[in-house]
Length: 461
Ligand SMILES: Cc1cc2nc3c(=O)[nH]c(=O)nc-3n(C[C@H](O)[C@H](O)[C@H](O)COP(=O)(O)OP(=O)(O)OC[C@H]3O[C@@H](n4cnc5c(N)ncnc54)[C@H](O)[C@@H]3O)c2cc1C
Image (cartoon, rainbow, N blue to C red; front, side, top):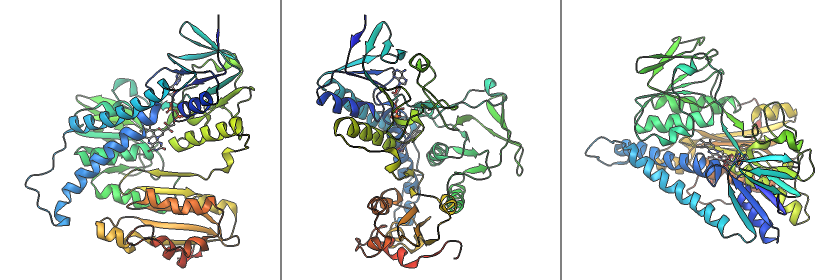
């Protein structure tokens, strides 16, 4: 016998709990199902724990630079990973408990702990319970992808989740994957005191970013003593005593790299394979992402997919924005769409990269005549005062409409400063609005209007 609800939400990531709150406050009887830890990836194994640890790594880095700021430390900096982990667990645990409490206090909401599986378009089983509802929202997220590599079954490896459980320092961490997760962990563990080698299959780090962004990040990481290997086209693994040997087959450099621990950071797989989607008739693409339209509806009426599992975003803010779109359309009679949002994200190495809108390559593909301005962080007073002058900021503008098409701030405070550009983009205002704004001194943001006085055609320096 099924128990009937107005809505079932599968997964408590960044969209599920917020949606449960809106629906239950609108008077709907809601069931929420979670098989793992409440709060999902961001809270437990993603943003919150990693950025908490990035803060520890930054503190260690600054302490090592004490002399640059006129301070004398009596002893060399030593990182106690047990305490770093305890701090991370406390921050992440508090965040999880607050989501748990939120769910417990929602009116009309029943929480089920277990794995949900579709039985039909309107029915879901959770262990021995059968739940039925005319509206079902899937927010099941994704997990670390484990690639097929020769010899991988002979060695033990870490993922972005299991690495967070380490309470000791790996002497030499090999990181396979030179993208966001690999670089954040790579720099973090280097600053904790590990030897780090980052191995990337492509010709450069962060292949989706502009070349100047990739190159500068490479210089920053190499400057901290991280070994980088690109063009590692055929990676294989083997155990040699206590060491892990990776065969790389790179075009340049040694044909292998050895370390004590191995982190696989090569992307994520959506948690859609054991959800019984075939029994509900819900279509997935060849990578396993649930196919949705611009309003996050699947091909089956009454079923929506939100967050990482729909392939329309891979961030906390995209998942939360999915919730806002679905809630506004269902409850507020609006017509919000995924295509209304502007791509934006940050990479939390130090200094961070804040990104908004199109990259240079995407801009070129539009064929529009554009103007570009760029300014090194050495010419940003705030960065000089803080002794953090690595990186640059740049912006690309449509020459005819004067609207900003894209921007990158790789530098201290870049993750925050990018928002003044992003908001002007959302306002669809010409760049001149930002150019004439009076910003506060001394900030990184104050140089954005100044940079905009320097616009030149793309391709000319
Ligand atoms: C190391 C790392 C760092 C990151 N850092 C950032 C960052 O700095 N900024 C940022 O914006 N994003 C970051 N992300 C990405 C971010 O964590 C995710 O995009 C975000 O959590 C959105 O996820 P979601 O809402 O799709 O679902 P998730 O948070 O993944 O939650 C899905 C939930 O569904 C549950 N579930 C799955 N299947 C079932 C089932 N059958 N039945 C019941 N429950 C089920 C899972 O247990 C999980 O709790 C990071 C990710 C990683 C891995």
